[in-house]
Length: 122
Image 1 (cartoon, one colour):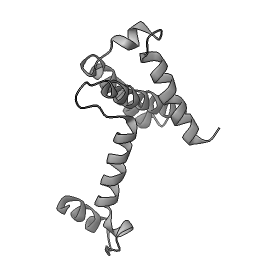
Image 2 (image 1 turned 60 degrees about the vertical axis):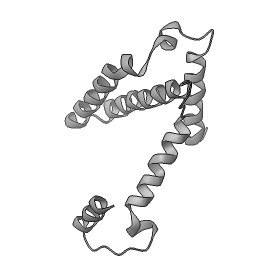
Image 3 (image 1 turned 180 degrees about the vertical axis):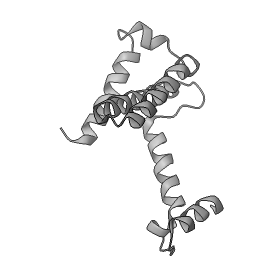
Image 4 (image 1 turned 45 degrees about the horizontal axis):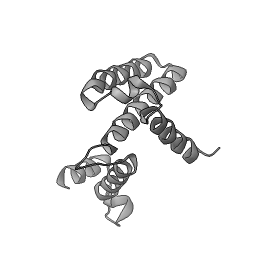
């Protein structure tokens, strides 16, 4: 399988977990109830990086990714303002392109400090 298909697989797994006949615990979760897990998994990733444990980093980064996908799946269910993981990905890709005109729009920079200044100016 390609990497893209694994990301799609995660979407499908989350859809099944949140759907009728899926997991009751997953179906009951809200953005609010999951916040502690998002923080916990983020700190566990920080610890793995600090410890230089690449196996643990991969696992914890997967747990952080799960939290992002979980929140995006919950957001799809909002009655008046839904959004999906695709919307989240589009938003961050657009933001990265906008914030990196030296890569995507022909703006010239000489140093990483110039890049940071552009980031703040944009």
